[in-house]
Length: 482
Image (cartoon, rainbow, N blue to C red; front, side, top):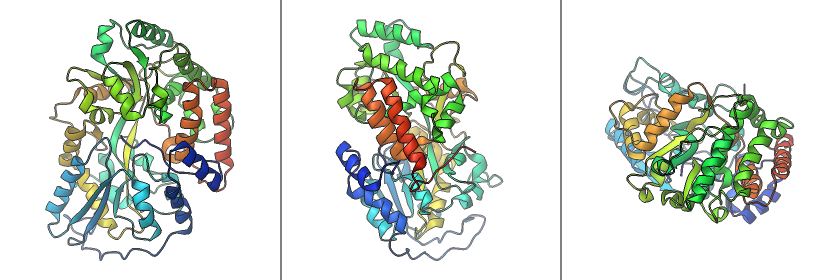
C-alpha cells in the first residue's frame, strides 16, 4: 500500500497504556514502541559523517562522489522498481559511489535499533504499516532539514530550483512547525471513491453526486447481488479517504482545519454528524460487503476487483497494488466523494489530493548530501516518468507525464483533479497525529461504528475525547494550520 498504515504515537494515552492497547489491537508490536522513548533521549552515538564533496554546477549539494549511500525503501503498493531505476541514475552520476538498497515492510522493527544506536540509514521511505511517526520524529529533532535540496537547481532545468518544480502542497506537507521542510512526499496521491466503470455502466447508473442518489445506486447494486461498498475492515482508517473530503464538502474546509488543530468540539460540528450518519446508514441498510470488518486492504481490494463490491475508499496506489487481480476491462475510475445535497458548502468534485510516500533523511545520517542528491535525481523528469509508468501514480514533480500513455486509473485521477480545480482539501491528521488518526479515530472509532457496534453519536463523543486528550498531552508536539 501507500503511505497510509498503522503508526506509533502517543495520541493522548500514556505510553504504557498505549503499548498495551496497541498490542491488543494487533496494530503495532510492543518492541516497535520503544522508538518513541529512544527518540526522546536522542539514542546512542552519532554516525560518523562522510567527508563532504566539492560543490559544482554538476554537484550543487557537495556530494562526496565516492561515498556509499544507505537507502531503505518501504516495499509496498509502489514496489521496488522505481527506486532501483533511480539508484541506477545516481550511480551513473557518481560511478564510484555504491548504494546499499534495502526494501522492507518492517520500517520501525528494522530501523528502531539503528536509530537507537545512532547509525540510521541515509535515506528512508518512511511508509507502510510500521511507518515511524512523523510528528514524533520532527518534535524530537531526528530529521535533517531538506531546504538545501529544495534550493538546489533542478536536474532538468538548472535555472529553476527544485522547490519550483514541485506540485502544490508538497513543500507545505513537509513543514510541521515553520519554514524547515522535514520530509519529501514523492508520490502525489488522489484519495476518493474508487470503482469499476464497467460495473457501474452495467447497472445503468452514473456516479452519484448526492446522498439520495448514492442510496439509490446502492439499492440497485444490492438487488443485482453486488455489495455496494467494502473497505479495509482491519484498517478502517482507509474510510477517511472519502469521509474526510465529504465532511469538507458539506461543512467547508474550515471544519477539517478545526479537526486538524485539535480544537474543542471540532468533531461535534453538524457536518461531521451528518456525514457519520450517512456512512452509518450504509452499514444499517446492509450496503457493506458481508465480512468486511474482518478483511485487510488486500482482501477487500480483491473482493472489489472480483466484482463483489462496487465502491471502495482508497488512494491512487490501488491501481498498482491491485493490478494482479484487476481484469483488463475493469475500467478503473475514481471520483470525489458524494455529498449530501445542494446545501453543501463546497461543490461536487471536492477531493482529497496530497503528497504521499514520505522520504526522510535522518539527522544522524552519515551521508545526508548523498541522500538529498538521490531525491534530486528522483525529482528529474526521467525518474518521475519511470515512476509514473511503473506504478501508475503521479509523482511530486509538477508535470512529468508529457508523452506518457496514462493508465485508466491515473487518467481518471488526473480528470478528478481537473474537475476539482481549487476545491482540493488536505487533512493533516494522518501525518501530524498518526496514532490518533489510525489507532483511535480509525480503528477504535470509525471501525466500531461501521461494524455496527457503535452509533454515530457514540462514535463522535469517543473521537472528540481522543482529540481532547491529544490536545492536552504535554508529551505530544502540537501543530496548527498557519
